[in-house]
Image 1 (spheres, rainbow, N blue to C red):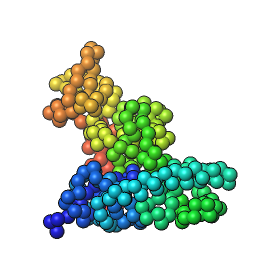
Image 2 (cartoon, rainbow, N blue to C red; image 1 turned 180 degrees about the vertical axis):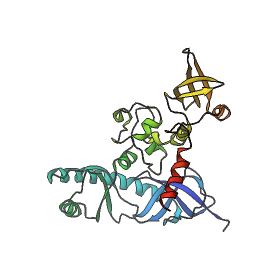
Image 3 (tube, helix red, strand yellow; image 1 turned 120 degrees about the vertical axis):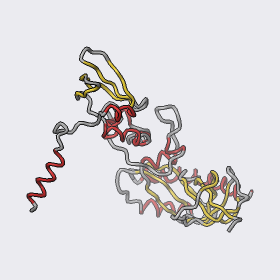
Image 4 (cartoon, one colour; image 1 turned 180 degrees about the horizontal axis):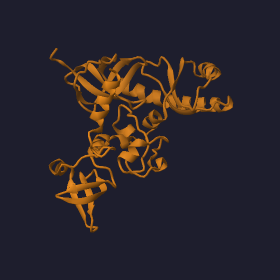
Length: 288
């Protein structure tokens, strides 16, 4: 169908990103549209056009947001803020260890959703019972991860910019301590911990840039260049250079691209004596 398209959207409660199909062509970036989702009718922000994917969403386009939709959304937000304060008071009285982040009411007002983080499971049955009695609505409690929590609330990172998760990220990549070593960073996780208390997401952004490390000679190893011996001193993955020191202490640098021409690569533990092929031949003999 030529009169519809796929657009990228952002939800106004969780700040998550997604795509919606079957949207009229006259819908533009920066406009609001109304969808039918598993939460009910929702007002979402259009970020621009997108490419249809095989994993189509279950969101149904209803209409371009009307003035009434926007007014209803604003009123629901005011009501949700009051509901959040009530929920916090009740949770405190009940001694529940949970960090309540946000309350959200869809346009059709079919329920109130409370987002929270917690270190473990929370028995909130009594809380839900009391909330339903006071707010006269169906209550839904949704536990989210700490990184999702920062995405919902927004925050400023140590770089001085808005946290990547609340700015543009739609999926959280795995970040581990090994990435610090790969990127020649100090092995002190506390220095690279984000607002959420986890290692910063941006550590994963340049992971591919450091994939060449497995092909580089190890720091401290001895290599031969034009008949002279050099010691590998350091790598610079930003400038894509490797630094050597000759026998007289003079430092020289070469780009990663020049290493192939020089015939320099990662030295095997056995000194490059075809140990791997010999090992395979031995295994074949053992296995008959």
